[in-house]
Amino acid sequence: MIDNEIKSDTGWSIVFLAWIIATVATLGSLFFSEVMGFVPCTLCWYQRIFMYPLVLVFLVGMISFDKSVLKYATPMVGFGLFFSIYHNLLHYGIIPESAVPCSQGVPCSTKYINYFDFITIPMLSLIAFSLIAILLFILQRRFSK
Amino acid sequence: MKKQKLVIFSTIGLILLFLVGGYIYKDQQFAKAAAEINSHSSSLVREYSPKKGNENAKVVLVEFFDPACGTCAQFHPFVDDIMQKNEGKIKLVMRYAPFHNGARAVVKILDAAKKQGRFWQTLDVVFKTQSLWKTGMTAHSEKLWKYLPQAGLDIDRLVKDLKDPKIDKHIDQDLADVKTLGVHQTPEFFVNGKPLKKFGYKELENLINSEL
Image 1 (cartoon, each protein chain N blue to C red):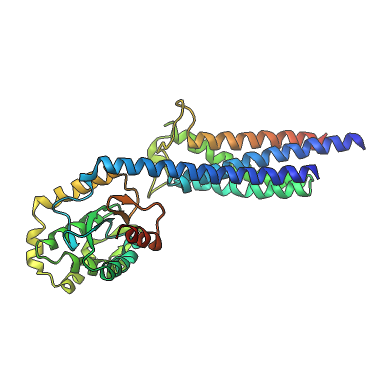
Image 2 (tube, rainbow over the protein chains, first blue to last red; image 1 turned 30 degrees about the horizontal axis):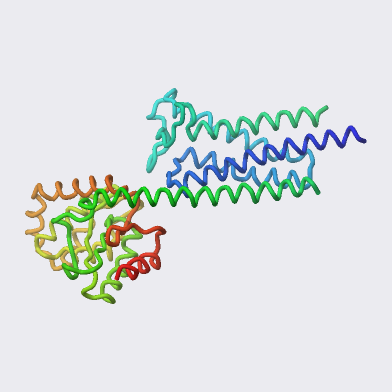
C-alpha cells in the first residue's frame, strides 16, 4: 500500500514536470509570436498544434492521476517530436531549403534568435519535446513494473 | 491538497511571468523605437510624400500604408474622419510600405496619379475596390486598372507618367525609411514623430488629441 502510494507520487511528479515543460514551451512560443512579433512558420504551427494540448492533457492527468495520461499524451509527443526533428534538420541545412513546405510568409529556415550558436527556436522546441518524451518513457517503465 | 496548491501556484506564477515579461519587453522596445525615431526624424517625411491638410498644422500625422493591406483600407475612412473633425489642425503625410506581393505596382499607380493631382482620389478608389483586385495575400494591379477612371484619372497620361524612373526611387526611399524606422506592420502611424504604443482606432485618436 505504502509502496503503491510512493510509486504514484513519483508518477504524479513526473506528469507535473512534463506539464511544466509543456506550459513553459506554450507560453514561450506565445511570447515569441505575440510579444516579440515573430511570425511563426508553417512547421512551427505543426509543433504548436501538438504542444499546446499537452498542457491540458497533463493538467487533467494530474487531477485524476492514472495511467491513461500516457495513452493520450504519447501520440501527440510523437508527432511533435517528428516535426521538430524535421524542422531542426531544415534549420541546420541538413535538408536543403528547397524542401521547405512553407510557400508563403516566413520560410522555416529563418533564424529569429540564435544564442551561443546553438539555442534557436526550433532547438528549444526539440528540447521540450525530447524532455517530455523521456519523462513519458520513465513513467511508462514505472507503470509497467 | 499540497499537489493542488503546487499546480495552482505554478500556473499563476508562469502566467504572471509571461505578462510581466511581456510588459517589460514591450516597454523597452517602445523606448528603443522612440529613441531611434528621434535620431532619424528626417526619415519620417520626404518632400515627395503625398500630403493633405494644413501645411503648418500643429499635428503631423505620418501613415505608412500598403494599398493591399486590409486594415489600412479599414482605417482609411477613420483617418479621413479625424482629419475632418480637426480641420486645419492636422497635416497627413502618406508613406509607402508595399509589403504584400504585387503591392509595389499599385503604389506606382498611386505615385503616378500624384502627377495629375489625383493621389487622394485614386487612394479612395484603391481602398474601396481592394477586395476586387486582391486575392489572398497578393495584389493584382492589372485588375485595378478598370476602376481607375472612377478617380477621374487620365489613363493615357497615367501610362506615360508610370515610366518616370523617379517613382521607383520614391518607393525605394520609402522602403529604406521603413527599415530605419522599424516599421513591421501596416498601417503604422506616427503622430508628431511618436509611434502608437498600442495599435487601435481609439489609441490613434487619443494620441492625436493629446498633441492637439
